[in-house]
Length: 385
Image (tube, rainbow, N blue to C red):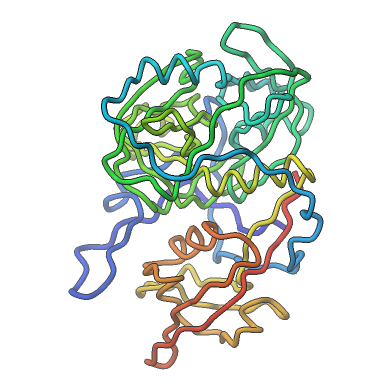
C-alpha cells in the first residue's frame, strides 16, 4: 500500500486574502490558474484524486537497517562570495552533471542527474527513473558524450528521488551544499538537459523557500518542501542540480509551474521552478546507496482533505503510531508544526518531510476551541524501490 493515494499534479490553490492574524497559504496557484508538473520529458498521465492523505502506516516505526548508512560529503553554510562567476561555476560543475535517456516500451524521454559518488552513484528524480522499473532502460550520457547503462539502486516516491549506478570509477562528484542556509534573493544556477539539450546552464535567484508543492509521475505523488527559483527550468531538467553562488548543490530540480489550459500542461519555464532541498535529498540518497531502501517520516494519522478550515484535520489515527502514543484524537486540527504555521493538509505533509524519523518535534493542535502544543517523536515507513 502506498503512503499516499494518487492525485492530479496540482498544487494547493491560494485562498482569498486571509483575515488578520490568519497564516497566509504558501501553496501555488491563483484560483486554479497555475498547475505544477514534473519536468521530465517523458509523457505520463495523471489520475483522479482520492479522499484523504495517509501520513502514517503500519510500516516500520524505527530506522532499522540504516545503522551502516554511508555519509555523503557536504559543506555547511551559505556561499560567501562577491562577484558570482557563472561561467566558472558551469565549467567546474558540468562534468558532474549527466543527462538520462529513458526507454520504456513505446515511450521515450530524457531527464537529468548528477554524480554524488565517484564510483558511479547518480542522484535523480524518481519520476525520471520510474518508467524503467518494469523492463525499461536508462542510459546515462556524460558531458564528454560517453554513455553507460544505469541500474536503479533504490527509489523513494514520497520524496521523488532515485539513485542510479553505472559501472564506472573515478567520476567527478558534485559538491553538496547546505539548503538550510539558503536565503531568498541569492543566486541560483540550474544545470541539466532540458528538452534533451545536454549541458544547458541557466541562472536566476532563489525566489522563495518552503513552498509546498506536489509533483511526481505515473501516480507516484511526492510532497516537496520546495526551493523556488526563477532560473529557467524546462521539461528534461528533472533530477539536475540547482546550485548556489559557490557551485554547491542546494537542490534537485523537480517541477515547474505552468498556466492551466495549455496543451499538455507543459509549455516551458514561466519563471517558477521548484527544487527538492539537498538536505532532505542527501539523507534519502545515503540510505538508498547503503541499503536500497529509505525511511519516510510519519506521524501516524489520516488527514481529511475535505476540511476547508485553516489547518489540517485528523480523520483517522493509526493504532500504535506516534500520534496515538502522543495523545492525538480524531477531529483534532493541526495548525502548527515545530513553529511553522500549517494552512492545509499539503503544507503539513511537506513540513513533516523536512525532518527525519526519530526526530522530536512539537505540533500545535486545536481541540474543542482550545489550542495546545503536543510533543511527538516522528516514526517512519520504509520505501523499497
